[in-house]
Image (cartoon, rainbow, N blue to C red; front, side, top):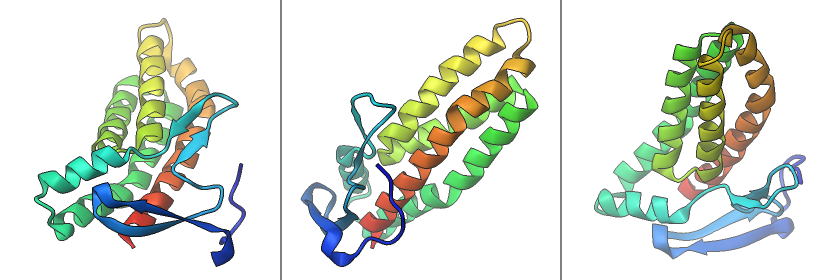
Length: 165
């Protein structure tokens, strides 16, 4: 399932998310907030209940809620790039720091798939760090995980930007 460019208005599905105070969000067809990953079960891209809780905790102040989500979107690419550089250089300590930064920020906005992938990578990096030569294992973990993390990050950004529109 892929998205090959701008979807026409006719191919968009409307989704109402009253729990997060959104009147109407249009998701391009095939890009609803869940994905099938590697032939496995559908994993949610976003958890609307986390966004609803975030909005409630900011006392329904749209400015604060939107700023928080916008900051996540703006910092996601630099976090992924930091993760890429630390994995490919074989630096397990800095890779764990980069993973934790990405995972916790993803959890805070309800980016469920991105957080789950980050947690899976975290376990793999911790295992590699405990091994005899993590510097040789970490680049292979980058090859194994980064494509999925980048894709999930792009899809998450698309959905969050649609929610902010």
